[in-house]
Length: 268
View 1 (tube, rainbow, N blue to C red):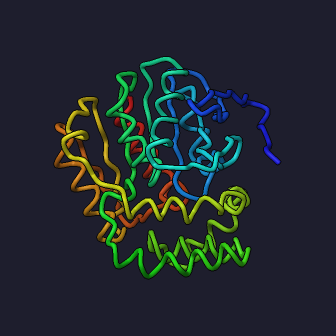
View 2 (tube, one colour):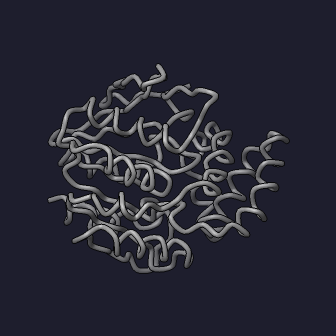
């Protein structure tokens, strides 16, 4: 069941294949699109949303198959990137975009396909660096957990072994209301991680992003995420990197003020 907060409305956009794309809209000011990562929905922004909504009209987007957005059998990374373009152009530019993890990777690609983005914030974009042997080791276990229907263990295993969150951070996430949204979206987890087998970081396309771009990185994040941020930084001319000391992949939850300081100082 999707719960709409009293100070929010739900707005839908229609993807090219007819799927309804849902955004939870609130706040006041210029539009800011929030694009969540894998196995999540719009609720993942709750710890930082009140402060963001003081300055922006936020569009907390539920990606395909998650939350208030529909799904279709022919999922692909490319189709999800096109979904984001549809939402951005439906909002009406210029739109600031903040993407996290898979949402950051998708937002990065979407930024090569539309001129309606004003500024771009990418927090540890997924897939840019994703070792094949790592995928070979983790995917069969995650697929087995999904087939067994043990969504809680599936999401916990993903959080520990992919972004490398320590157990105390996983337990923090489990204590938050957004965890139920993660469990509901767990069926999308394996297909998104599997896209790491075919994703190619196309520097020649990403280098065509000419909007102001901020790259966020947790100071304690795994090396492959650090390498991914550095690779994007080298390609997007004029991009900035802000390292959040002591943080990992979920600073919105573990260091919300650090996260907000970095984002708002860039977007102000």
